[in-house]
Amino acid sequence: MKRIAFWFDVISPFAYLAFEHLPQALEGCSYEVQYRPVLFAGLLGHWGQKGPAEVEPKRQWTFRHIAWLSHTLKIPIDTPASHPFNPLPLLRLALACAQPGDLPNRRVVEALMRHVWRGGADASDPQRLRALAEQLAPVRDPAGDDVKRELRALSDEALQRGVFGVPTLDVDGRLFWGIDALPMVRAALQDDAWFRGSDWDAAAVQRPGVTR
Image (cartoon, one colour):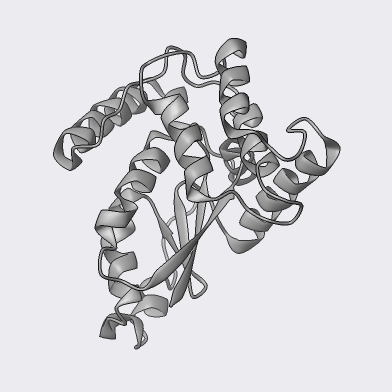
């Protein structure tokens, strides 16, 4: 059985769609998933990128694309009333539902994802956040220093691994970015010959080119 690290931030519609589609995309494979929350804004800041919602034409395309993926994959999605929003309370709630040093399970992550991406409500609404916390009954204080430290540590670990976006899936030390990489993940889990040769490393070798 292979272990998959699933790096996510609930702010990302692609992370939501990949999360929902994962069981179908990997049906028949032997694997277990570790759900690892990470602050997407921290990744963007580290790598010097803007988020898709910060570039207007890209924002338009992003939400058209997720609407199409929702249609083709038959996964319901509703854009929250305000986006982007501050995901920190939700990411911390995810960790607070696990014992120190542990990670949230799929049930918890599902509740968080659907809180954001189903119904079209405000993901940051205090009343909704309180209701979600009551539903999940965290074993620790989401605003506690230990939970905050764990989220920072996970974000630091993601950066050290080379994670630059969400969702990112880690299989045997290889990073797969985005929902469209799920077929590659499936092939890696099935020991496709492409992953046994030099193709993976050779494809990433930097060629000479213009720099700016």
